[in-house]
Image (cartoon, rainbow, N blue to C red):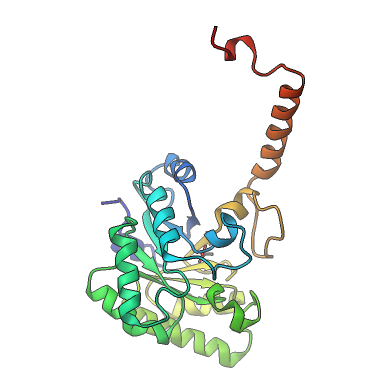
Length: 268
Ligand code: KIV
């Protein structure tokens, strides 16, 4: 059992804002763990893996086997944060039975502590079933990347009063269905605040302003590893991409001038 549980995460509601992060591999999980057991209550193996690790331009192509694989990689190393894995596109939209089986695979084969899925009312019966079976569920509302075809891209949601009202309503549905937390993505900050106030479970924001209970960022974005466009809501807290470029060029130069490997790096 990992240190952080849904109960402990629920208790963070209304307290000091907490940070969470995505993760897809064991090296990164070890770095997260190295900050100490209380640094991050939750780590998400997001289907953003499709973009960050697989080079797709959306999460749509990601399949359940790949989510299981990445969840296992992270789970071998992660000891403290709750490990949540995304149900990928197509693994639960075909019916609650399929969704239930997909979630079971993430738990039994992937070693996840819970699952995340996108959508409100349409997911309520599946969420209820998972929670009744003892599987913690995190909801995801607002800009839901698995709906990028229908949304016409990755666009801010809930801008007009009607859409905002609907999202608040859906957040309440997710809470009633048994979610222990909700990710709120890509909405105006006023709506991020309104949803946070409307439910008694933690709301984890990404592009949802500063008033949600917690924040989540994609690993590559926050560390400055993303080589292309990053959304407006991202702050890069490091320059690991630049550091990696410098290291790669130093390695290349050292090989070219035969200063690498040096004597002490050579077996006599
Ligand atoms: O897939 C993902 O990484 C996510 C986060 C951005 C919340 O859903």
